[in-house]
Length: 271
Ligand code: KIV
Image (tube, rainbow, N blue to C red; front, side):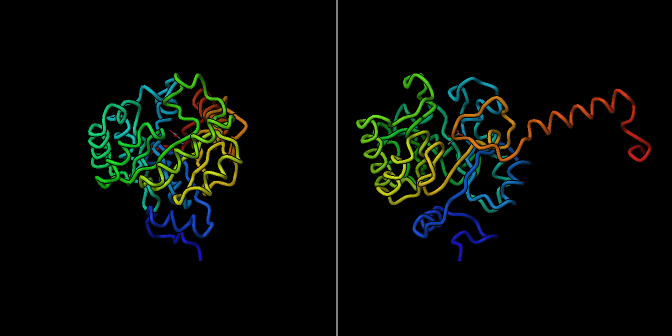
């Protein structure tokens, strides 16, 4: 029987059992009530209110500008719609790097004010003290290694990470530290599939890959990317599961035409 029983809420404990049972975990980002309702009804295991909202929702070039208040605002709508899946809220740049106290205070505030089940933050050994304090305070923490977009200015771009032995070894070391510190799961972004497999075998918590091959315990994609809404973006790891960008443009074009031609609304659509 599936560890993911429909009609009951997903928990971090159940995610760990899914890893042990070899049952894959499906995660997507979401940033609003309406789409989250659909994702939840479709049976998604986990939703990430990602700081990719900075790009997708706010139109920024990077994830860095989005604020704690903006993340809380978006997460509230998602949480209201999520009846079964676990909701993870991304901690934005600057909300956990200053001090451990600051990290715990922001994490608790984000959970209390949004109702999210857990938080996610980017980085390895350098943020370990913050993660330990957060876990001790009762905050479920998801880690994020490999390509960490909040560090784009240090990394010098969005290229593949962990290609060289030294970086791959550090990534495995960091993953073990996050696992031991009590992270309930770790996102692995844009690293070689073989490295993601090694990490997945080295840690007890589930790994969730994006651009990391199919040997991780689960997968995550940015919703607007996989639905084909973010039309110009097509990296190698991304599959378009729908072409909604084309569908939306087509529908809006038909609407404009109907308004201009006065064929909308017709008699049945009028009071
Ligand atoms: O913010 C985000 O959408 C993410 C995913 C790419 C994992 O962190």
